[in-house]
Structures are given as C-alpha cells and as structure tokens.
Length: 75
Image 1 (spheres, rainbow, N blue to C red):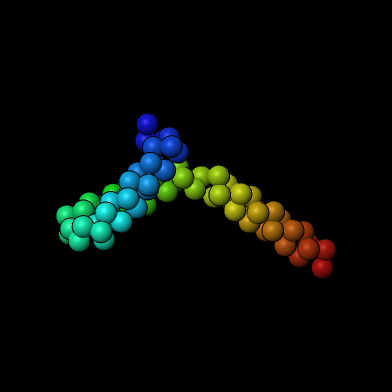
Image 2 (cartoon, rainbow, N blue to C red):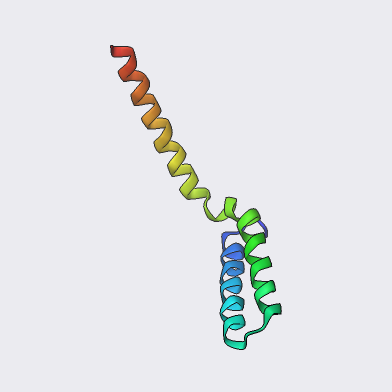
C-alpha cells in the first residue's frame, strides 16, 4: 500500500483539502493536520510519486556524462 502511487496521490489531495478547509473555517487544528500530512507525504511518498521522473532524470544525466566522457577521449 505504501508503494502505491494512488495512495500517495490521495494523501496529497487530502492535505490540500485540509489546507483549504483550514482557510475557510480558520481552524488551526485543520492547518496542523494538513501540514503534518503534507510533510509525511513529502518525505515518505516522494520516492513513489516521483520515481518515473527520477529515472528519466538519471538516464539523461548518464547519457550526458557518457557523451562528455566520449568527447574528452577524442581530444
């Protein structure tokens, strides 16, 4: 369940909803709950939510490093 992208997306949606509700009702407990949920989601769920992006970024970095190394060898 913790490795599910849908679960962490739902947590982010809930955090945003709690934040908006705290603005409307002006309730600090809702704001605290939203901040706590957003923090947990950021630190734990970011690996799951951004795994595809991180793979693409790492592949691009490796490709650029290989091109740089090849160019350096040619000189």
